[in-house]
Length: 392
Ligand SMILES: Cc1cc2nc3c(=O)[nH]c(=O)nc-3n(C[C@H](O)[C@H](O)[C@H](O)COP(=O)(O)OP(=O)(O)OC[C@H]3O[C@@H](n4cnc5c(N)ncnc54)[C@H](O)[C@@H]3O)c2cc1C
Image (cartoon, rainbow, N blue to C red; front, side, top):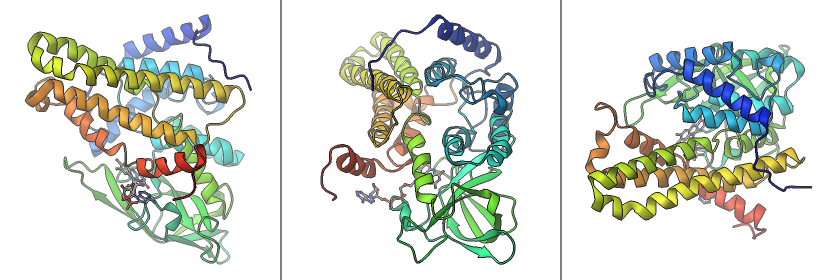
């Protein structure tokens, strides 16, 4: 396999970049002008933004045209992401669907499932949450206890149990979740991946307020919730494999594009330049941290191009997704820590007087080593599957 990276862009890719840039310049709301997507009002405002993007076919550029995309490749998607973050466009409220479930639907879904779910996801008419974690099963996902039993004569399943930490679960219309369908089978083998409509009788959602009071999460309770066979993804008992494909997208290429970090790193450098004038002693103390954070973001960008090259040459992402996840989450923390050190006590006010973007970003970055599988678990994966070390 030839994995030589060619860092040059083609004229067609540059034309695509300019088209994206000019569309975003004309349509993007001012930075941070929408209410937080972890509030009911903000969730709807972000849905509207997704709809605006969808109308001009910018919401899912890498998907086939029949589902609302432009059918472009990974490199063009990375270019779009660069422009998206450069424009400081809103966070993607549909990210669980578009970046996590969709690649899994393309790989494991039936034709009917793709036709049913992808267009509504692309237009954000239906927004998805992820129902994996349970109160006693987070890192040990194969230890989930929520179960599904056959519904006699109904061509479907009855789901019972509790999920927790579902991001935007308080507002989402649909949930993709893992349930135990065979309690006798070995832990990883008895699981099935279900697509569940949140308005189905028997589903109860209880929002969990975060430290800032916003209901970013929810617990979801299932009590004999009927799900038809057509909403099993990837086959009964195959849930673990299907879930690992979703996790690969979450940790690997699709959830966190490098542009998110290179854009933040470039704002950090601007902040440093400003601090040199206003707080030179503080700036001098932070110079190394700023340079390191910028280099980490750039290293992630180059590593992603290498991964993309591998995928374009017929390879797959594999366990490298875990190394990737450690890198992006730690880079995010490094960028925000350096910014807070530069700002000192002003961090709480810096911005347009009322919000504190670096502090908000830092609070979210703190969660990076936890969500999408904790970094300790990712280090275990790297040790065992990339370095070939014995199981701990
Ligand atoms: C912002 C955010 C968003 C989230 N969104 C979702 C969502 O949408 N849907 C969803 O299902 N879940 C979601 N989660 C939950 C997340 O997936 C879990 O928190 C995570 O998998 C860890 O599980 P846990 O909290 O049960 O911690 P535990 O598994 O109890 O782990 C506690 C600590 O022990 C360590 N540990 C555990 N086992 C090992 C081991 N074998 N080796 C070394 N260390 C170990 C962990 O690394 C961690 O530090 C979200 C979490 C956050 C923070």
